Each structure stands twice: as structure tokens, then as C-alpha cells.
Image (cartoon, rainbow, N blue to C red; front, side, top):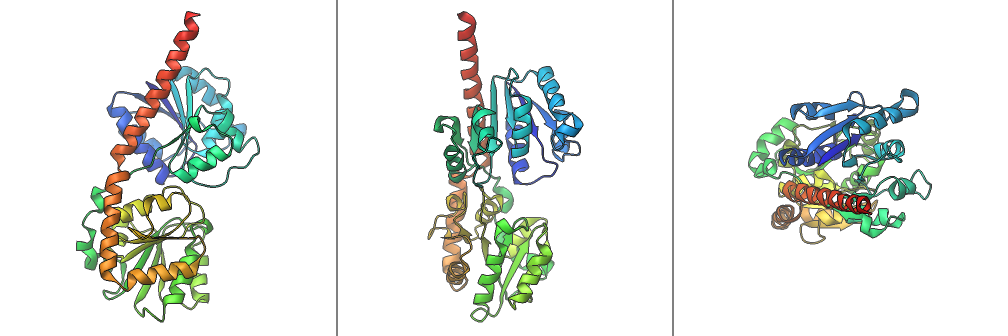
Length: 375
């Protein structure tokens, strides 16, 4: 089949990583993939590595730079059987541009559980601009259905990771701690996430402040980039734990952070299926996470970690304390997390399910087209 992927993001994060996995599979299986990308998109480099065609279409400022007309020209020239909108902005502007275009299947992927407003440019984009929606976790699927999209037009496909780079990291714990400047005797809680309010890092700082007297060697590392970096440092200072909380920016490779940690934590207010938590589970780390989005699908409460309400710093402190005080519990829950990734969240399972859905939708459209032609 011929597929046109439309993406209006310039950066590279979890969504782009997942799309890259899917495209590799589709390309290897003989499907034709082309891309409509905004100028300067990092995804262009990935497409070039596979020798795939990229069309520059400015969907970040489409009304000013003719992006809608440009996308219509691209679609007319490539004649795709399926158009995949890879982000919310590409769905809105790309969906409007191709609303009347003759495309057999239009589909989008949604990756976060934000509520979907009832306004036409919110819920309407999922009801009217595409034929099908993929949700990366049950919470996202539920949001889309609640917005008025019929359940038969929504599919749950859990995202997945390649677990191999995260196996056996504990063997490099001492070296990783030395590289990161973490004391060998520290009890370390780590979080790798964009530094923004919805990720809930303040909740983790409050939990560490509550546990400081009980665990004298407790440390928290909040890795990631984002506008909240200075504010989080100030928040830790105000809570009296500036010496225990590190906000170093991104840690690359993230394996250094995971190797150094005793426990991984994610306190998001809204979430999809967090790649960072999948990677932590693959690294056999026990986790304490909020109940936002797909986090409870990664962490089964009491099995491979604990799940608590978003913003509940007391609950976070309580569950972190249980793990920090019991190395046997940390090992058992960490191993349970590794098994859960192997069973449910592999790249192979995700890309196979995505290809099967694409095939099914395109075959259905072909059948309808043939039936119409026979009348």
C-alpha cells in the first residue's frame, strides 16, 4: 500500500520514536512510505536514512505559508491509499486540507489523555477529519470515544520498545553513579521526563522532603529538558531539599540514569504510554507512578510497583518508602516489570498490530470502492 505520513512537529520525542519503529516495519515489508514534514523537522534525517521521499509542507503556520494548498498538491501527486496524521497539529490542519480529497483511508494516532473539548476544532477533528483513530493506551481510547467517535472507529495499540539496550544495567551501577556524581551509598529515585507542570515533578520533590529525615542518603534526579528547570530547583530550595534534588537537564544515554537508580518514579497529571516508564521497567526497576493515562497499564499496583493518585505527595512518599526500605521488594517488583514489558510492550507487537490495522482499513476501502464501481 501507499502511505503518506503527515507530521507537524520539528523535534524528536516518544511519538517520533514510535513512528520510526512503525515506518521501519512498513518499509521492510514493501509498503511505500512518503512524508509531508515541516521545514527543519528532525524526522527528515530518519526518512533520508531509509531513502524515503520527504515533501516540505509548513503546517505550523499553514495560513501564512500556503501549507494547506501544498499538502493538497502532495496528496494529489502521491495518490496515497492511507494518510496517517502523526500529531494533533497535523490532524487539524492536514485533516482540513484533505477533507474533500479522494483518499481511501485517513487515520491519526493520539498519544496523551488530555480531555478532548467539544468544540469542532477539538472533538470534531476526530469525528469528521479521519476515518479511524489509534490510541496508545486505554485512557486515550476512552477520551476519544467520550468525544463522540464511535468505538468501532477507535483501536487500542500499545506502543512498545526495544528492551535489549536496557537489560543488565545494574551491573554498571557504580560506574554510572560516578559519571553522574551520585554517591555510592545514596538511595536514588529517578525520573526522566520533560520538565513541565503536567509531568508532576513537584509532587516528587514534596515526597522526598517528607522522607528526608527517615532516609538520610535519599536523592532525587529529575532528568529532562523544559521550561520548568529553574522553577523546580527553586521549589526544591523552598522545601529545604535542594541538596537532595538534582535537575541536571537531559541525561544521555538515559541508561546511565536507569543504571544508577534504585526506584523510578513518574508523577504525571496527564500522560499517554510513557516511554520512560517502559524503559525503566525493561531495566528491572521498581516504579511508583500516578494513575494518569496509560501508566497503570505499565505498572500493575502491588505487582511491579505502585500506582497512586496524581498530586498525592503523601501517597508517593509512602510507596517510595516501602521500596526504599526493602531491597528484596525492589528486586521482585523490578523483575515483574521486566516480564510485563516482554509480554505486552514490545516493538514487534506494536508494529505488527499497526500494519495489520492499516491493511484491514485499506482492504475495506478497496472492497467498498470495487462494489461502488460494479453498480
